Length: 301
Image (cartoon, rainbow, N blue to C red; front, side, top):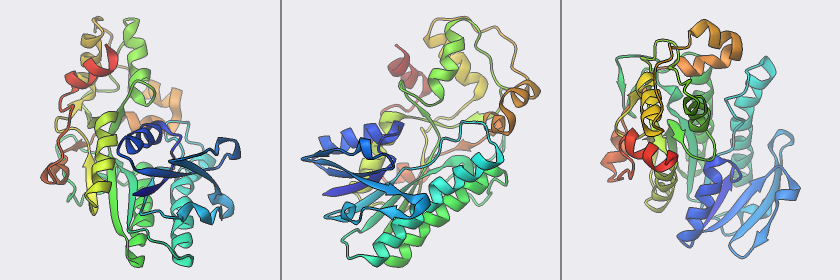
């Protein structure tokens, strides 16, 4: 089997590429940086520039499936220009892949796209599953809706489309965990706002395994990539402090302060999405890290 990956140099993409290699699956990857192109026996890079609709057609040679992870980091300050980049980096890149497949002979059968639980309505009480129809109306909900629409187009050319709706990714190397753990290590850990907002999370190892399983078992549809036991923001910070053997006594950081510091992007800290991976579990997928304590023990010790 051979897979084409976008976003292969990102947090998830790097670990996924290693995992695929362990499963004897060859990887083609797309990069916007020519200096990052490598040509090794089972790992080959190809240049693309979605903004200018440039892509090396050879990237499709022998490819059976595409895993689309590319997208601008949503954790930077949301200027008007950057908000547009957040959308276009996901949608224009998918559209370019769609055009490439439509215009060239290929054997691609499946399109797996990253997505996010940000599509679900902000709520302290709703327990979302993949079938939830309550869509978040904020900017992030708008982004994910457009992202998934771009992925769904691939069904029109005969591909099975799988969307991995990802929660907060916990990892040593990046994402939110090192940022939250840093002040906790110095005894300054604090919840955001009320601290009651739900945070549905996933260990990066489980996320990578989920992509591999979705590929090998040819999953189709939307699947929540979140551990079975979501926690509130206050519980998250307390658990990090407990794992690091640090005190937890600081008052919550007020919403107005974080808004002043981070701008509109601070809204991500206060979104509450309690999510259950119902279809994921129904597929027989088993999480190695089902509880937050087990995930933190692995990542912070």
